[in-house]
Length: 271
Length: 171
Image (cartoon, rainbow over all chains, first blue to last red; front, side, top):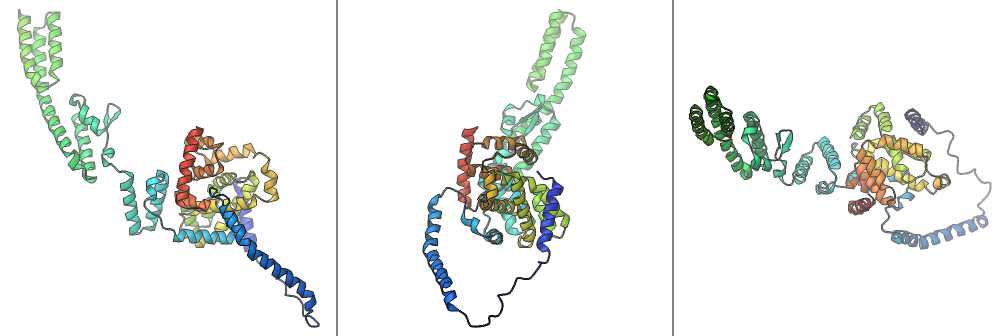
């Protein structure tokens, strides 16, 4: 196999040959004759030529028909019989007349769609811009599928899963707020706020009530711990206190009762 | 996209861009031609001819968007024409040089996915191979594939669907 340089050199030398001035003339049509034309010599040649033309007129259409009907499934065409120049001209005529349709994007692989999108951008026509936006809309038929995902402990959680399985105690408030902001901006830009707006609001309410109570729980938790530290002398009472303090993190309502519980524990230890 | 932008640079007067284009795409084109002709040297000479034709006709192209399709279409047309030549016929019964083919495939098929597709295509009908190669390796649109194969887009769609089914059965 030729390397790049040899290949290029060969292309260049052929190009140079093509553009070099031709050597020699094309030759004349023959020298002047001394006398008149001898028709007896020309006549057989003319007769043969006429016969060839007649045969060609009769048989060529038949041959072409036979070739067309030969095999419809094969992609080979009769372009083989055209010259290279004709081929190029035909090709260019085709690409200039053929119109690109937007429906093409529906069936084509993504890579080819991207390729065409970039090409149309270069042309910078308004029609091209319209085509591109239509193509994009078609390719993402359901905007609900494109809602950003939440990174939950190294795993990507879809919006629908996030709604169902949200555990605020394992999610930092900042992360939650950032994610909700992302979802909101996506919903606004894709006109789906009407569909997921109520879910967003419900989640926000739940989150705000959790995070606000969570901060009060933390303070009560520290008080409980302090009191239990003072009074814990027996193993059994220690375990009970731990269990209740763990439970306090679950919800705000539980926290108050557990605070009472810890009071009871305290009384028990006193005994 | 690189080929297209190189052609546009060349059209704008950057003579070196043509050399870059040739170097960048020659292996792809030669590999494509070997689908029709069982000889790498002959495929190379057809590829050269295709680049020369592109050089000569550069002003006829509005932009670079159809360059790949043109080169492949021209190469296919010449390969089919030359297939009947004594030189090509002499190679018909000889297997293509395996080392040359491996070298070509290594430079053209850059991803595992592409290698897998090409490997799985072995044994398929020639038309199916060509259409799958153009769509999945050369990443051409159906219209462009139609231009290469001198057929219409609907026919290409049909061929791709059939080729995919055949490929599925082959895997």
